[in-house]
Image 1 (cartoon, rainbow, N blue to C red):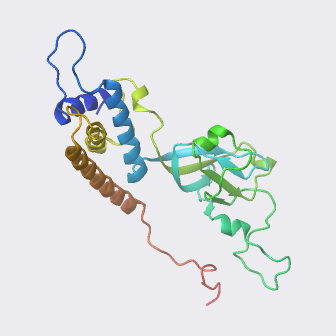
Image 2: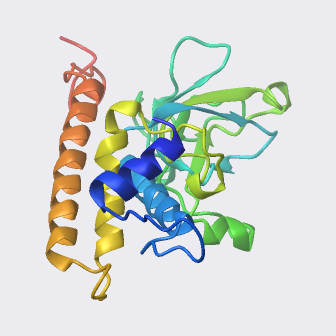
Image 3: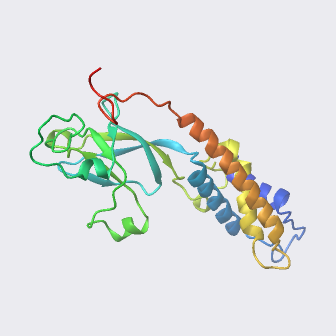
Length: 253
């Protein structure tokens, strides 16, 4: 649905905020700007909690740089790979890359890949904080980071990684044009209006406030978000496979 259609649906068919006045000041209880802000927050909340918006991003690698600030709209990274490769990078965590390893090991452990020289990044993690040199704007946005290992050499400078991500909308609806379409899939357009109605009716006002209806709209919205999240998780589910050489599995029979 287009943004102006959603605004009309919310105002007329859900909030019943109609006006017959033909001139003078509007007697509507909510301005278009206010309702658009509520619809925008509903879309972002649906994406944030329902994990609905799945798309891709790219990260450009730089020589000797291991950590990269991600787009502020990235909620989670599902996978990462070199744009020219078919296989994904291995997903690891801070523990895998930073645990202490003695200089001398009396046996060969194929899982102890730390200590590799700089070269082609083969693994990534997303559980690092922004580095000390991060700008105030990056910190205020709460950006997450992508760390690659090993650090790229000059041979991989300006090459790109393709990330499959779960994200937030890139546009704010109150800055869009009336005929623009929200980034949330259309199947959920009417569902997100329940949260916008909740925000509109929560105030203490004899005309515009209706706390019980507000709570009902919030409950309906949250139920729809939970169902959307379950559907998303079913699509992302992969059966557990054997991991020989790791997690207790031996390389030998």
